[in-house]
Image (cartoon, rainbow, N blue to C red):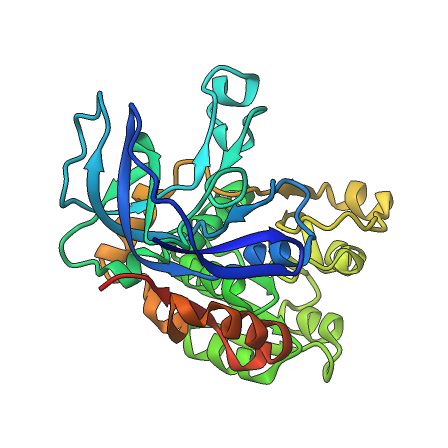
Length: 340
């Protein structure tokens, strides 16, 4: 079968590989669609500390169950499914307190084990979620990015009437925007350095957009909030140098959600944190958010296909990577079609 395999940083190709089988407790999924994520790009560039090479990447995918392994009772051949890439041990401290997404033995499909950029992939049966009939397989491949948004918003604990500032209008910023609107957050400010992305953010419901290269973000945000600052700040830009600005822009009792994996240090002014009693939370992957996102998609409150700028076959993966590396302004979400 064909798969997109990364052998080492900057060494990748679409190759013929041996097809997997469904072991005990697993299902074999015939992958229909898979999305390219920023973390896939980090693996390709050698910037992901968790990956083990060689690796078939891809953690955003959906397809049809082709076979079930021994002991699988709740999933059947022919079921249309999407896949939660988070696997956990169930016994460590985070698992015991209901936070398996930071399990001490965490493994992520597409990072620690082979993922969805292949014709068939074997995954734990407990990680598949059946799709309502009115959610297409292309939309279902994008459930996972919305779970990232759902997780960071849950970590920030919005209150009625809270304003939200989203730094970065890439795909994750856009999923946070859509998810926030679906959850009833009405005033949302989005910043980016690419005007095309800001136009898209406006189309998807941002009330204010700011180009941080052309405008004084601090001045504009404080003007929009009557000098109070913003209760909720989501860092979808993932630039460590922006943390001091986030601390200044946060309102008293504000909450800041951090999503980046950068190893670069950030300047943290303790006075800003303490005088406002700010809460800084990390958010990793998702904590059982697939059912919530599927319900919101089924209700029409989320529009995942609005994020898709390109649909390409698996054979075009190298070209898609080149575009994302060198012409990112041309792309939102790139969706790879692997089977019909």
